[in-house]
Length: 352
Image (cartoon, rainbow, N blue to C red):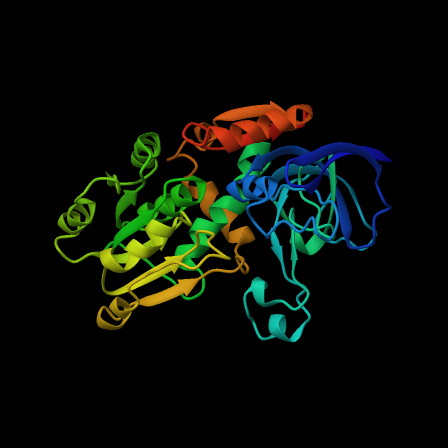
């Protein structure tokens, strides 16, 4: 069976090619793609600004935010059937190495794969995708493929707060740095838990969106006294939960200025490969607890259930700002790359 699939060969060299799909292994399913989002990390790999995309190992198919429909299952598949709407994990742990058996996060897996970033782990920017059963999750039949494509993004914001021994409740003042897709997911998570939520983002349109998706207040960090404003909004205490979802150097450095005493600081924005100057001594005197998240361990089904229960409160469809047919993938990347002020989420569509 032949399929058209995108391959990133090197920076700015993204090609749609026709390939012959291999036969399914017993534990694999064949998925017809319906939608695939373009993440900021996809753009950075496309631009050559991130080492996460491993085209040094060979051309690979991007796309870790996808939704599709199963059309065929391997002989050993037990939990999935043709016709199911599904999405899948991005950071894929083997489940059998010592680190996995010790319960560590997927990023600790000795044989970790990362869907949409490596030749051995194809993503969703193609007509079809073959993936092992253990990494595929069914979504409700009444969801759109775009809804399914949001699960991976939402899981980062959700796990960033609740995963890895995290928690939040109505007594918390939550400060979310960045109001992109991941930041918005964290905002909705924090608001659902009853916390007071303060969004911090330099782009006015993103601050406006944050207020529609759960933020009680939106602060502009380009203003001279924005930190004073944060303290006013938290009754002089600073944030008790502070989530860094932007990956921006200035935002990372400011975490130690806006975190209250004994705050839980959750790092989920990508900044790997860069050194950031911070006043680390404040972690001592503020007794901060700082936690990163490498993969969202066991949160696929939980994320789908969580999203299902809040979908009547938030307009998930409106989070998608631009749509392109798969054949216009280069136009889609141009929009995501050069118009970040308006392109909140760019979606590729596959016509099913």
